[in-house]
Image (tube, rainbow, N blue to C red; front, side, top):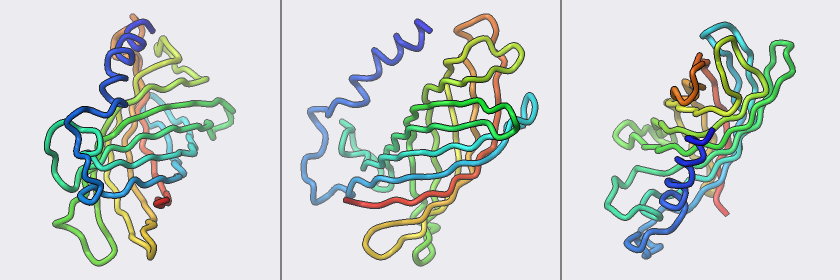
Length: 190
């Protein structure tokens, strides 16, 4: 637990503060987008645990907060997730994540744009598997998806995401939980 708090204390100001050298020219930045999503799936290791999550998203142009040049197709995605197990356990979870999302513009077809994403967060689970050790854990994940652009700047998204829960060996018991989740969402601009 102390390790998680120490990491957040060190990285928090770097992640959320606007660097001095970030681009200030709003004309060259992609608009900030907001979204909601539903994720459903199942843990496949160590055993089946059904999961359903509701997610809020914030998608920023990477250059809004970065102090170095980045590819035009790179975004930062901040998420907050709340969910339940769906296998009769009636247990909850809450997670906060940050991911890098990269659009694969070379594979774009009409209104469809594929993307890949990966990142890490912190998750609290109201359930534990044998040998897990802690209820507050790290939550690395990676996925691939597609975005369908709608008129007015909105978009429907669909992705498949691999999701891992473990304490990163910060505690003697560190049995991880691995899941595959299908995500369906909606993005919009204000």
